[in-house]
Length: 471
Image 1 (cartoon, rainbow, N blue to C red):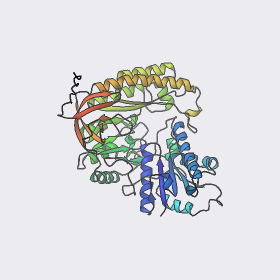
Image 2 (cartoon, rainbow, N blue to C red; image 1 turned 90 degrees about the horizontal axis):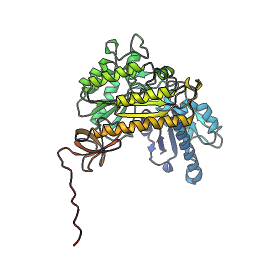
Image 3 (tube, one colour; image 1 turned 45 degrees about the vertical axis):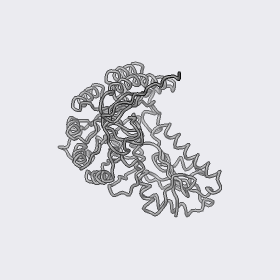
Image 4 (tube, rainbow, N blue to C red; image 1 turned 135 degrees about the vertical axis):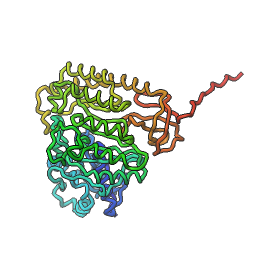
């Protein structure tokens, strides 16, 4: 029996690809082992979104190769590189890793990984002319509900990939070139998967894609634009899916991740308000607020549009937690642009916020723009925005003290509230006696930075008496 170890890097969308590969390996009768030391084949599922993710991927590839070279029992181990970096740079990587890697597979080969392993495992490395490449052209694969999959997340939450690819023209982003144009799954496919996950005990369905708000629009008879709002009167839309998911029996959250501001509509806001299982949380990367920067980024939005949209979302969904991300150091960004961004953040008071330093990505239009910002300036701007957000986050956390919240317990002593997505947001620390993988009502008693402290609702804090000194 061939033993395979898989290292999954990057985002949740890449993790789902890893889960599909593991599912197919199990189906083919191969054993998936946690440690590379035990494996006949190691797969590194890479990310190449920004420079730091590429560096991490390369480091893992080299580490696996180095380790197999140091240990005699791993001398015949095969190394496969998969994922976004393989899809994007397969030709270059074949030369760069001529002696280190046995094969490269692209995004459309995740369901073919078992026969590929059998093929390369049968090869004589001594006579092979460098690594084999199974990478096809632009990706067209989209998973279905019956695609074999072995979840790598804890039992109580899952990522549900509702679409692949992206149609947006953002000048800083390479994703459309890697993952292809947007292509949605059917509502029936997503609902079938979700229903099975809930039956298995999942308490949180995290809906993901490159642009979840564009779900279904690619199937419309009249072609939508990058600015078309969610509108179920024109065909299948995200609102259609949310209502179907909300109708599934059970106690669980539906969480929206990776939404694009250009597609938000009053219909989507109203649908969320009318679907109690949809978490009062949205992830909506805005990237900037300056019209100058939004135009250069080709974000299909404006500062006025964004301000109005956030006002409508908060009015229609009271108490909602809004998560966003911004990019600082984009080519041509001025001090005035950063001032406007900070003023906007201070006024809007986002519950959750992340900041990226612009990464000059090969093959993007932004990489060719004049006015590239020095690394030191990017760093200074990043620190300025993060200092501001830390102050706001502390105020947001402080406002939760005394409130009773519904939380999902992640592990002994650690939970997440409705305002916290897995891995990227804060935590709620609870007594270790609260059952893992289930919902609980807790009262917030304090906070530490981005995290909250809580006790089960109705439980009084323990008052510790100071012992008297010995007489």
